[in-house]
Image (cartoon, rainbow, N blue to C red; front, side):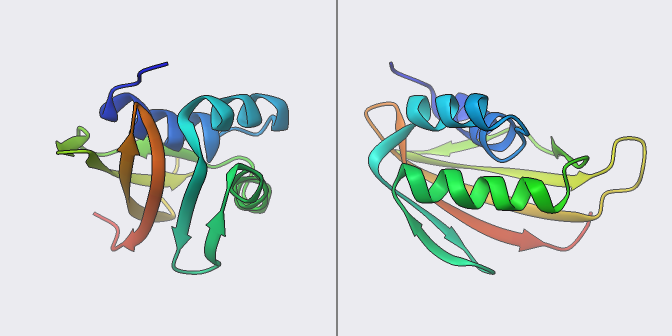
Length: 121
C-alpha cells in the first residue's frame, strides 16, 4: 500500500506511538513500516525491525497511557522524508513535552524514524 509522507507521519504518531491497544498498534506497524525499519530515540537508543519498534512503542505508551499526541504544525515533506512537530500530555491539560519526528520512506513505508525532543512551545 502506498501511503503519502504526511499520512505516514500522522499514523506513526497516532496509530503507533499513540495507540494503547497492542493488536491495533501492531497492525499499524506492519502496514506503515518496512521490514528493515529503524527507530532512533535519544533516550532509549536504536530499535531495529518491526518487533523492536512495537516493543518500544508499547513501553512508551505504558509509561503514560492517558497522554495524547497532538501535531502543532502541518507535516513537512522533502524528497523521501518528512517531519512533524507535536506535543503530548493529558487531554485538557498543558502539554508535558514536545518533539519532532523525522522519517525517511521507501515505497510508501517508513524506513527510519528519528525522534527529537523539543522545548515546549
